[in-house]
Picture 1 (cartoon, rainbow, N blue to C red):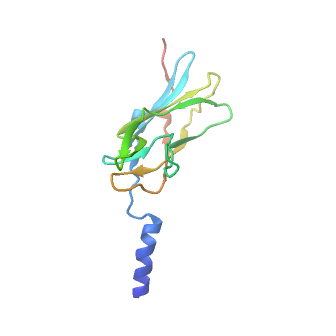
Picture 2: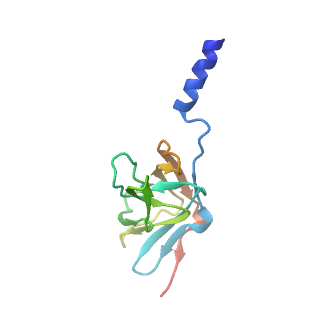
Picture 3: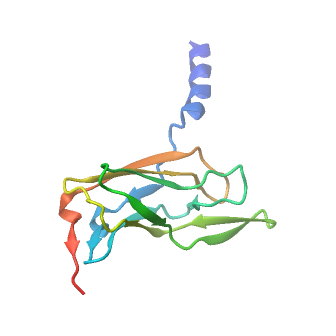
Length: 156
């Protein structure tokens, strides 16, 4: 019985139990925007207060950069992904780390000929969250932009 309890004490940290997700997708603040010559999407996320996530470009190989992946059809092509402006944190008083905090928006610009799916847009955001004490194992947040959030046709 005692060896079973010891096994569980070691298993819990390995499995990451008790660690939160640190990040939420905000579908009500996200959507597809189409003009006559431009198609783009805004994806809005909220990082839990007291935490930050690594930026899309990191300065230290020990950190995991934030990466957006979208499940798209063959008729949709991404021109570029625009991550938010980074904040620079000073770690241990000596090392700089580019991070995202608070509410962030990731913009996706599609090629003008792209056919944006009308049923739903699905994807995931790979990220590494940290607080002032430590960094956590990388997480993957899957999200889905419901059809009601797109398309929004904007005329000039």
